[in-house]
Length: 260
Ligand SMILES: [Zn+2]
Ligand SMILES: [Zn+2]
Image (cartoon, rainbow, N blue to C red; front, side, top):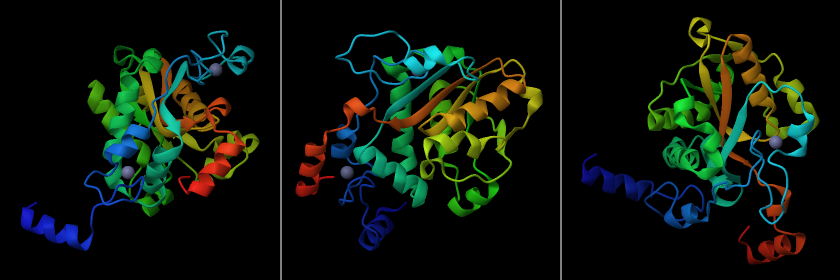
């Protein structure tokens, strides 16, 4: 764009950081980016649940040791859903701020290169696939946030991005549901597409959030049933574990200080 028009547009719509709302050139400003922490080891080697580094324990979490067969072999997330990242994701997803997709994709790529994502080496991936939105939701939002992120990942590791899945019925947002209802909400909601290319492929499945993992499990199940050789999952963010969350006093303090 010509600098003149850029100047006019900046006057009309001054660019702001989507995380802190301050007038900034970048959609996630330097200060906010510095406050976003990537997931670091130790993590459960299966589901990627972050362990308290002060505690010593087994390489897998109690849930993974108990649980039987899982449709995905490895799950990892780039960062914690908290602070400026949580705000930027909400602006991206619920307020249609596509502009923040690029820095969020970059955070994902950084997370993928990090130590905590060692189970997701690019050479173990044949094809990248995003968790799809239902056509009605896609119509409302105008873009699939997971596909924007998956594009960044696929580009970074030099693997093709393919729409191997579709959402055949609308589902309620998982975040609005109690953990116990999430598996039921997404059961049977996905179907495989391009089944002729899924056979034997090692799929890297991408979503924006990993909460209980119910959506990823359902998608992975459909891919495996359609012949995928292996499914690994990678999310931009996951809920911060209990041991990371500040205590009640700190929360009260934050409210007083209005730093949230
Ligand atoms: Zn900011
Ligand atoms: Zn685990």
